[in-house]
Length: 97
Image (cartoon, rainbow, N blue to C red; front, side, top):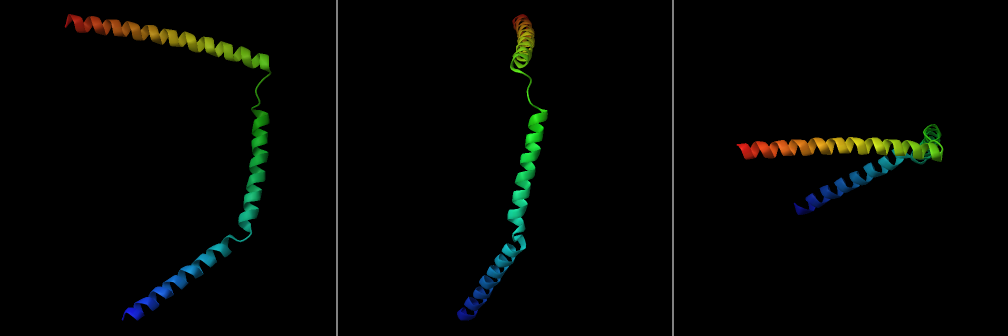
């Protein structure tokens, strides 16, 4: 009876090997060609987007950065002041409770 079980296991292993060979055949050379086409297409698209999104000249970029940083600083100062005011009000409220 144990010999019969071993024979069945061997059959399953052979079936698994056949399936693996079929999987390799289904990919074929299209996998390599598909990868190469995808790589080339990605490179062309990436280069196109890079050209369209290229930054401005150095002095223009620095000016924009300075302006945005000043604006961000102003907003941060306002938020900090608002937070400080709210904290003071909350402290007064707790003390008066």
